[in-house]
Length: 315
Image (cartoon, rainbow, N blue to C red):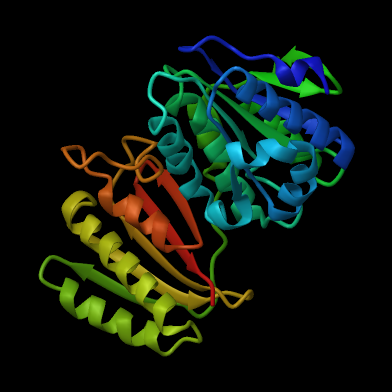
């Protein structure tokens, strides 16, 4: 087991390294060492990685597996916008202790849209955990991921663990700048149904949207999820987006049903929707958080002239 993976930090410090790995053996050695060192120090440990990686890790964890919380990231992180709240929740369940987390949000097979939102997630971890005691280790398979993904990992992680070395990342970039770079133009759909709404028209537009969604190939449960998400997003347009908006609906090539909401609103807090809002909060964010929980992918584009939410739900 590597010395790098076993190093821990004092409570109150935050460390966010990317682990660059090339083989399953290298992966298992580093992540297994990280977990065993956390347990030896009496620190809570969460490992959220794709299911195939979990199976590779189990023999290395051995009897310690039941002391570590194991989560399939392909389920938890299908929508990258859900991951951060789960990591925060794990840390919150262990107050006064430095949480040790392994999170692998990008793997081979992720779509370009998912990678952008996962990259945004990686940047926002640095803001969300800046004043908390935690180590969040993020593995990257440098043999199967595009070079652009590896380059972005260097921008979103202050340190890199690579072949047993713990190195500062000269490319590390302010989270706000990384998030701005993720705001690439969204591709235009073909044949979208367009619904425009303003105050007094919301009930009618929701009825039209529900009728459209009910005619898709989504299961009734998934139809209900998308209808509820559309309701939250359009209500936000009236409350926070200038009082009006445009809803577009279409079916994507991968059979996902997509709803896009555009309005004149602005995303003042980049963590809105990704961090679970407190019940007593007066700063909003509940609607956007719910949207993230309901959808398989949420693409967000914040521009000077308004906000765009593109919601994907798959059959």
